[in-house]
Length: 292
Image (cartoon, rainbow, N blue to C red; front, side, top):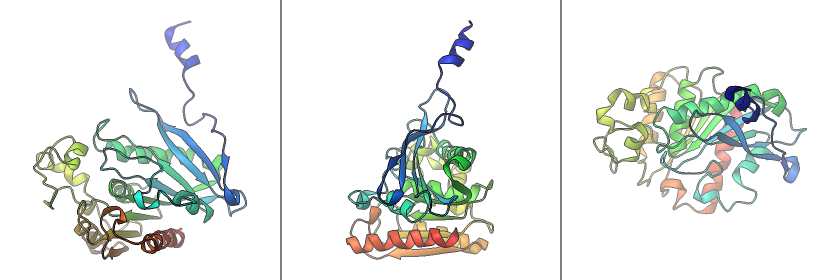
């Protein structure tokens, strides 16, 4: 037996055909599959997602929410929708599944592992895998809303603007960076030490074509799916102008874009009371229902 033949026997099965992990039951028939491999990166860690599925009788195949976590492209966890939702019981993803959606919370490569466009390619790979396993999972990837917060909102915007097979049904963007070219304190595009520079692998001004390709404001087009952009007016990490400029770029291109700026809200909805955070979440879920 050759080494290649032996490797074929001992290697883990490819995610396209690997058995799914057992589902854990939750209230109301919601099911949760944790740590499902969806992609293989040569020389890197397996890419995984957590999958929340609605109750079996809840109008299958179910529309899909693809969630991208925040963390400045440098850190973060796929199962985290931000600090203000961590104590919710049930959690935000279980709530979305209880509303009839499947939810895929996706790992993507962080900037210390690979630079842009690697994380965007990972989200595309997750969509591809979900399409391959759609019948088995009871989901309809033709009705996909991408939802992201902070750095995940940036990636969600790009996925919605660039992915066409199949096109997405909509995008929910919570306080996501939209422009990696324009100076906006505290961001300096000439600095090689910013999180944006670490994402790109160089200071944005030194890689202008890459910075433009990574800027959602530069990718707006008339065929973009509907966007809901929600941004805190007091955001000191990602200024509210990012959300405003993305909405303006989409509207100028002829694409539907809803913009909601939130008085008193800092990054991650810090500064809002619980009712305010709940209302934003509910409005975002209603938007996903509407476009699907």
